[in-house]
Image (cartoon, rainbow, N blue to C red; front, top):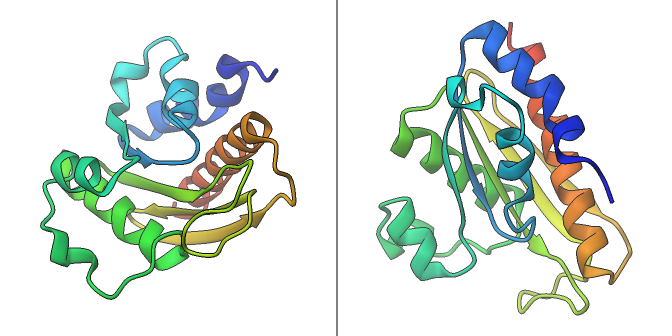
Length: 162
């Protein structure tokens, strides 16, 4: 099992160094992105908040968004991940927002994505989004892979935005 502190250490240090903040809106990573960032001592310097937005109701309430914000938009896409990343950033007043959505497994999601599918987006001074396909139906393994990929994408985007 990966070590949360090791996963979040470099990004935590980078955010502290740049005096930047972050807000997280994750679904299929199940809170592991937030947990990795919060496992770093001094996380209160950069972590403004986050949530596991596993239902439409939680997404709308926690991000203070009306349902029609996502009208005509298919979940589990880069566009959707970017929309929730922007909403998290704006809602909490962070430098960076992160959105993650997908299908953890052991089955695919109701939108037709296979297990192991995740879309991850970062929004802030620069925007970036990726789609990840693990090809695995192992739920927990996918959660760890999604979280690791999100942390890598955030770190890369923060570094490149200088």
